[in-house]
Image (tube, rainbow, N blue to C red):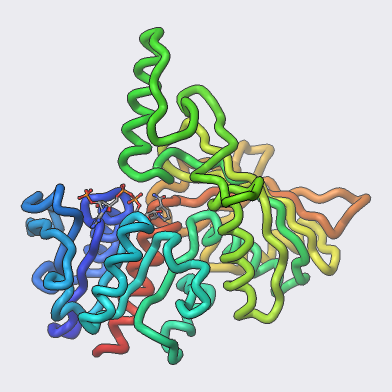
Length: 342
Ligand SMILES: NC(=O)c1ccc[n+]([C@@H]2O[C@H](COP(=O)([O-])OP(=O)(O)OC[C@H]3O[C@@H](n4cnc5c(N)ncnc54)[C@H](OP(=O)(O)O)[C@@H]3O)[C@@H](O)[C@H]2O)c1
């Protein structure tokens, strides 16, 4: 590791930030080249990093000085302020929030999908990452697109409360305990009680639109990612907040351009290093959120098709949202950009 290289993780006290630190530690990134930042609320907090302890500083222009790469694991409103500051300080910036995903001047990069954009020339030094659901959809669809062409993807995403960070985890914990004690809990992070419930709204609705920002994001981000492949399937669906803590489940209906048997589709998915096939239904083997936590691969199974419409493929998948769907993308993109400064 180049000893002049410095990485700052902003949002290091959050759910995704914690996973980013694990990812860097797993890759033996040295503690002395790492800076952990968050809001002023966390100033002075101590974070474990292997055998070392790192002290949290408030994110600021001053803190970005001398950093080679800044990884933003912060809410979108914070990223909008912090990314320009980090860029002005001369750092490469990778942002995992929704702040820049729709910005045509900012490359949208999914490591392992269109990694080559990280070595290309682009305006500025900020890179955006897609959402956890788009990460999973793109990785699942790409081998099918390569094998058969894909025209359309309908997705229902069952999203665990960790999609709302540490506050989401606390809210389900509190609601579950209140309900088991016979009390009706209050809803703060989610529009309704999520404990023992399903809420077909994740995040706010778009202005004057029946789609939520989360759902509209899948369509737009997929279009941007697949544009780099020259073939853009239409991705659309429904986001549902479900009362699980970690992991998202995705029910997908994929319309292929060329009909394929389940066996052919299975072989195509099996060939992707980003995926793990769990598809032996008679042995009760299929993807579940409880199996995917801390797994860097996306799990896929329950493959089905109908003889009457062989161009449609139905499947179920899971992704570790905070890990694979966010933190690992930050770490992989950040380390790749770091090579540009080496
Ligand atoms: N959770 C997921 O599954 C997931 C998946 C994909 C993308 N994302 C995105 O990842 C980002 C982080 O999400 P999360 O789940 O980790 O949320 P989280 O647990 O709420 O953590 C948020 C982090 O951001 C920090 N922060 C907030 N405002 C800040 C400011 N003004 N300046 C500096 N730091 C600030 C917080 O610091 P304090 O502790 O000091 O408040 C905390 O460290 C969000 O944009 C989210 O949309 C999350």
